[in-house]
Length: 400
Length: 98
Image 1 (cartoon, rainbow over the protein chains, first blue to last red):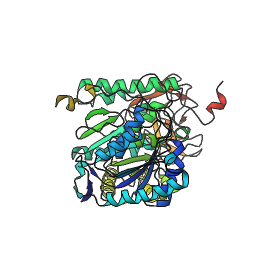
Image 2 (image 1 turned 90 degrees about the vertical axis):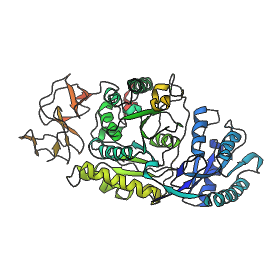
Image 3 (image 1 turned 60 degrees about the horizontal axis):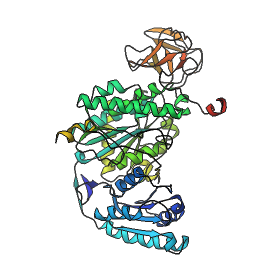
Image 4 (image 1 turned 90 degrees about the horizontal axis):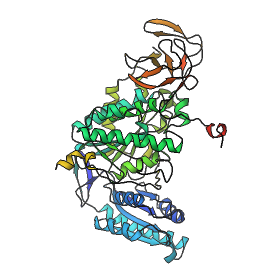
C-alpha cells in the first residue's frame, strides 16, 4: 500500500520534499549552503541560473513547486534578477503549500541569508510534515522514462524491459511518459501507427521532424561518443533502441514541459523547443529531461543505461536499470536492476519488466532508490521556448 | 551464443559477449571466424554487405554502409553512417574545420 501525501489539488505525492529554489546563479551558493547545512534527505536544491526572464523556466519552476512530491518551498533570490519571485511564491501559496522567500540583498548578505534560510526551511518542513496522508493506488502514479549513456545492449535488454513495465502500468490505468523526440528520429512512422487518432499520429511525426531539423541546425544529433564506444553507430539505431522503452500501448497524446497529462495512458513528452533554434541544444544533459518529466508530474523516473550513468534527481526518485552486464558489475553500487542478465540468458525481458514494476511500487511505498540513497539530487534548468500543444495532441481532452 | 539475431529481416547480429580474433560465432547455423576484437553491444554482418546497402536492425533501417563488409565482420563507424544526422566522437571538434 502506498501511503501518499494528499495535496489540495487532488494529486498525491510519494515524497514530501521541501524544495529550496535559487532564482539566479548569483543566489546558488546561498541556497546550496542552506540545503547542505540542513542535511536532510528530503530537503532538495532546485533553481534556474539565468538573469533574463524565460516563460518556459517560469512554467517549469511553478510546475515543480506544485508537484505532488513537494510539500513546501523556500525561495532564495539575490534581489535584482528577472525571475518573478512573487509570482512563484503566489502559485506555491495558492496550492496550499508553506512558502517563504529570502532576498539576499534585503537580508544582510550571504551569512545572514544562510542563517535565515536554515530557520525558514525548519519552519516550512514542520508544516509540510504535518500534511495529510492517505492511500494511493498504483493507477494514480505518473511514471517517466529516460535512457542515458546508451549502448548496443540498451535496446535489447533494459529498454524493452521498461516497455513491458510501462505496458503493465498503462493497462492498470496509470500514466506513463516517454520522451526525447531527438532520440526517436527514424521511428516516427512506426510510432504514429500507435496513436489514438490519425491527427495525433501526424502530430507525433511532426514532433520528430521538428527535432531532426533542430538538431541538424545545431550540427550534432542526440548521440554521445560513449554511444559509439558501446556499439551504436547511428542516430536512428539509437532511436530504435530508445523507442522500445515506450512499450506497445496506444499513444494517448503529446505533452510539453509543464503540461500534466489530462487522463491516464501513454504520452510522448516533446522536449524540443518550438520556433527557430535560439538557446542551444534542446537538452544539454540527461537531467534536463528528468526535470521536464517531473514538471509533467512524474512521481518517479525509470532510467536505463548501458555505459553507466550514476545520476539521480531532486524531487522525484530515479530508478536505475542497467542494460549491460559488464557495466552492471563495474557499477554495481549504482544500479537498482541488472537487465544485463537478459543477454546472459539468466532472465527474460518479461522477468525484468516485472522486476521494474515491483521496484517502482516499492519506491512509491517509500523505499529509497539506489541513486536516492547515495544522495544524488541533480537538477538542471536552462532557457527554452515552447508554443502550447495543439488540439490534435490531446484527443481525449479535445473530445471531453 | 555470443551474437544474436534480433529480427528475421536483420542484416546484422548483436554481440552479447566480447569476441576476440579467432573466436567462432554461429551465423544462421554456419560457423564464422571473427577477425578483430568486438565488444558487447556491437554489430557484426550477418551476410556480405555492399557499400551503399541499407543496414537493417530490429527489422528497421538504421543507416547505410559506406564500405563493404564480409560475413561476421564488425559493422560500425568505419563502414557505415546515419541516413539522418552524422554521429560525432570525442575528438570531433579537433578534426572539423572551424
